[in-house]
Length: 110
Length: 111
Image 1: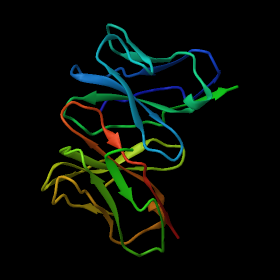
Image 2: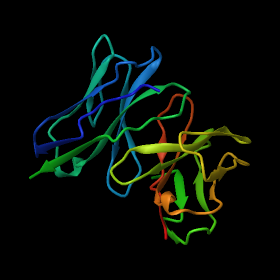
Image 3: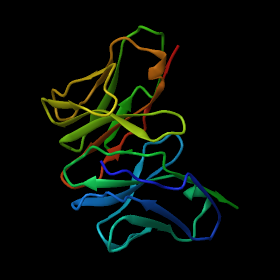
């Protein structure tokens, strides 16, 4: 399982863009990069997944450089409700054994 | 979380007691798994199953048993609870190349 490194915490204010970078130097060729969000007292929730370049959905964008050794989750114009823990996980298709690190605690202030 | 139901939501046990945590899903997902999450930490995989009748160990399997007799259910058993097993337990399901769906967890305290 590829090891990941993320910042432990990040603070932001409402309306700002939050960018969380995750390092995964030994990611496998076939691995995708997925991001999950976890609110207190809830299970993790899938946000976005990508293999390379850029992926965007209604919640976030994911930027993956050509070497795929890192990825950046971008949360546009955050609100208080975006306060959560965000996890970066390499994910092999049909290899379901996810390896969660401690994640990044994002705190959004008014 | 729609589709993955964990029961109970909370439980307090005494050391040495046994207990089964239930996980049920109605999405016909072949893959199911159990994680534990200790305070301030990420989730660690306990056991998983890729289909009915098939189970395997994850990262931290000691002290836990599982079985998968149906696609829908994947119970986690603690045979003799220990204080070190105090944690929040999450069940997850998946199918094909889709991301995992998690339940809302069972908060377990062992005195």
